Structures are given as structure tokens and as C-alpha cells.
Length: 169
Ligand code: ADP
Image (cartoon, rainbow, N blue to C red):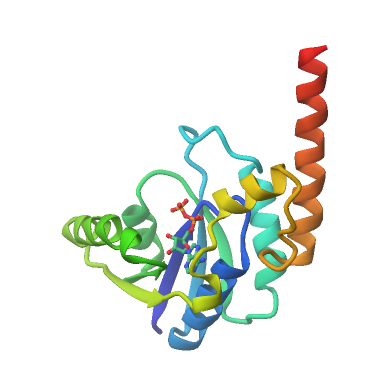
């Protein structure tokens, strides 16, 4: 049984993530989408539970894909789950330097290979951080995230904006 992990923060999941997960699901028998829940990254828009809930919904159509949280090292998660492949999407050359270093570090820690899948051209500019930034200023991100994520994103940003107004008054 060939198992792979697609790791990330998914804050929130975008159509670019789904593209990679869906393509990985065709290459491997089982794919685990692993959501980093490290406490040090406190500046998330969505909690780990919310990010996992959104992922579970969008991954439901893929029968061999599951969602899990992980804390600490991804390589420890891989060892615990008998996973030998880490799947990462590569958007541009700018992703490559960091991803290569990370891949080499991970394979020096445990017996794991990183498999890079080139992003589909229509998603090559897509990043969760940019989606949040554009949406914060009222930009239309409806083509970039699933409908349920769009609803939650709009709601969360409105809550944040209201809280910000309260702080200033
Ligand atoms: P991180 O928290 O590591 O920055 P993200 O949650 O934003 O990660 O993304 C997780 C992984 O999903 C990335 O490391 C990358 O492999 C992949 N990814 C993100 N956005 C895209 C995209 N637009 N196209 C292809 N792959 C992507």
C-alpha cells in the first residue's frame, strides 16, 4: 500500500491545494492531508479544528484521502503512520529553494522521499496568505476557494473587522 502525506497549514484550503491533493490521490493508494497545528504559529485566521473541518468537506469526494492534524515534526508523523512519501506542490522557482532544503532535511531525518507536483498553471499564483489579503480588502476570491470556504472566510473577516472597529472605539 503506497501512502503519501500532503502537509500544510491550509489557512484556509484553496483550489490550488485541492488540485494537488486530487492529483496525489491518483498516484497513491492512500493520501493523508496533514494540517500543522503547531502552537507557535498562533496568527492563524482559522483554528486547527476549523481548517480540518473545511478540508474534510472538500476532500469527501476522494475516497482514498483522509485528514489529520500533526504537531511537531512532519517526519515523526510520517514514521507514526508508515508514510514514505511527502507530496508538495511547486508553484514557482521561488518555492524551490526552500522546498529542496526541506526535502533534504526530512530525508536526512527519516526514510522519506519528497515528491514534487508542478502546480496547474491556473493556480500558480495562488496562496492562502494572498487569498486572505485580497479578501480582507473586498477583492473577489470566489474562483480561488471552494464555496463553503468562501462563506467562512467572508464571515471570519467580517467578525475580525467588527472586532477591530470595537477596539478603536
Ligand atoms: P505552508 O503552511 O507550508 O505555507 P500551505 O498550507 O499554504 O503551506 O500549503 C501547503 C502546501 O500546498 C504547500 O507547501 C504547497 O506544496 C502546496 N500548495 C499551496 N498552494 C498551492 C498552489 N497554488 N499550487 C500548488 N500547490 C500549492
